[in-house]
Length: 252
Image (tube, rainbow, N blue to C red; front, side, top):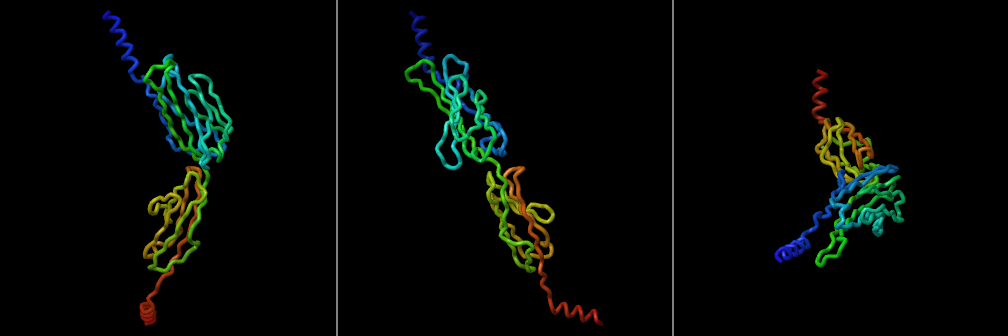
């Protein structure tokens, strides 16, 4: 009698235990904001901690894509339990799955800009009252690299009066992801901070030390940069009385 009660208690307690695996998804090692080059083949490598070989559980894995143009999410692929990947028709033709959870994107172009989601649903094989499956997901944003174009609010060369202030706005247009914009002086030293898609060069109380060529650089990615120089020339102010006195002394 005691053994029977004890066995029943054990079964009851087991039914209340949580999943041995929480179904946790780990983000790709490269992060959740990725930049890919046009024409390349790249991977989004998620991992998860469910035991897909377990006889007690089954899982459903699915991959989704939401374009940056605001269109509705599309299901790209799915795996039921540990079966073979099923690829669905979508606006992205070059899609493949590497088990357990890696999404492969082939021949990447601008259509690949957007958010990719990996979803994991875990269920019991047998229904147990009060027990529900688990659902987790993880999003990754993909940018397809586009080289930005630099535009300046000032012409070059530009002549600035001695003692005046001077500003020139540098803007990045068309870069993907949005470019970081930075100014550099004639010696290649960074001036000020780095702005997102825009940065202003400011020269105060200009004198001879400010003359020279400055450069604005916009960078969306290491190999996706554009730059444009400007030449600053100084228009000196002269003290006429001092010049006349100097001429008179030289004539004596």
